[in-house]
Image (cartoon, rainbow, N blue to C red; front, side):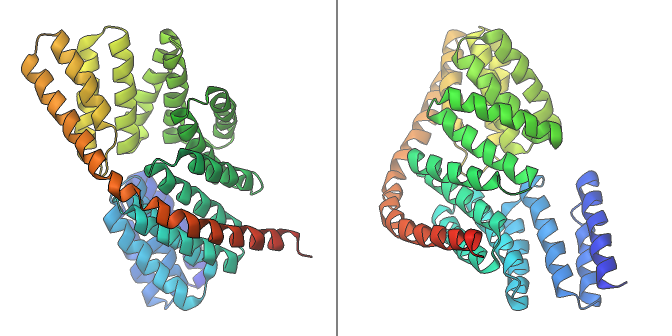
Length: 352
């Protein structure tokens, strides 16, 4: 097998892995690349397996090990484009494990590498990643700024998947700021994107956020229609976060509809799924809603249990406020680095 033949074969193995949900299929590909002494092919196989583990497999720690190994190979090969890609995924893995400052540091490395590689996709992912860290620390305005910049750049790159990711990230932050008109425009663009590139988990999130707009405007019938579609798509094709979020929002809808039993079931499902998600942020709202439901049904012991759980999560958030002060230490250097990167990217784009 030649190296070109290996790359074509590997693409087929990746498609089979996704279809069969068998990341072990990449084990043979890694061994085959080693036999061929094809380091680039080995890095690709590691990257593909890591992407599966972090996305569908939801194993960020295992994914991080694959991304780190792929990154070491990319650095040895001086393949800066591949290195920037592996750094992005390393940072994403750190973020999902609650290592926010480490994630930020790796994304900054990825941005610098993206300049060396003249890789616009890596640059976009870096902006989007920094926005995620800012969001964790409650810096919504800064997060919005970076997400809008990422989307602006993504519009200039022929990559529908990357564009959909940027649209979703901006939609989620706009919702937290109640920017409904901007959300509607972004959701319309996401709908068009999905017609060109169908992706069922993204479709589920499209229906979740559309349902949320209807719910917040007391349009319960329309909200129910979208959220039921989101529930089915999330159950069949979504990751843990998507399924948990669909369950939470559907629970809120059922509470508004006074459908107490399905509301309780949906919110309990949200908490059950959340036990598997590190840094799970939806639990407090689910516990608060369940407290009210239990009290309304006369289950005062259950209401007390959920009240205590909600308070415990609130206390944990207060304890992390000291950590959030770290934003003051990284925002100033981040501004200087980002300015330099923007100038360099502009030079690349308009040179010659």
